[in-house]
Length: 263
Ligand SMILES: [Zn+2]
Image 1 (tube, rainbow, N blue to C red):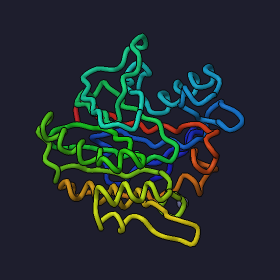
Image 2: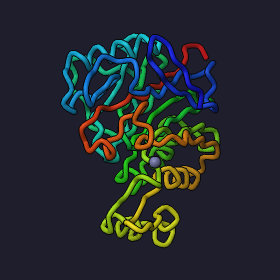
Image 3: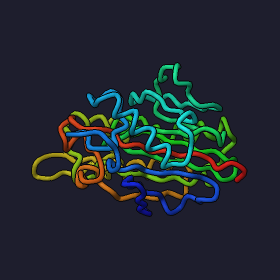
């Protein structure tokens, strides 16, 4: 990962994405105006933060990203399997539609999603010229939403999985994400013995490795270029929000991606 800081805003980028073709950033919690548990670049509008602060944070983020705020397309992330292919930004007056994967081929659209432990999965297809973001918590991982996105990309844009460049962003790691017996059973029921590759048993219970599971899901769907951020949100509260570590009282960091015009 490449770390950048400007005007107090700190963000990371994957090394595999071609900066001439695609702009992307995984924004840390640094550089915003929110206070207390939301300190400071909180982009979550429904987690209890002051609405005016969230709005100001959005404006700062888009200025930093070098795109107009009006270019944004975002959704109401619900841990489901709805995939959106959009040709236009979301008008300010239009409510968020539910969804957990968003894609576009329009360079005038900036895709944005919010995270705090769930896995951000960024996509770039340099051949069909498309970008996207997938949101995968345990539910999205269990239903293999990342593989659904790969298949949907083939259907909608003619993307070949082997052309895709994919990044697995900061999220809770397999040493920190404790899960119960119920979840272990769900994964075993769906994936059989393979699930055991991603669920480790420690003295105090089971731990789910969302990073490795999603990389396996992607590679099984034919993706060959997968980069791991290897940054754990729960272990790095100075830069990231962690829903689990901060016991639900926290903000959401933003992930943004857009195609460059003319690239
Ligand atoms: Zn960790």
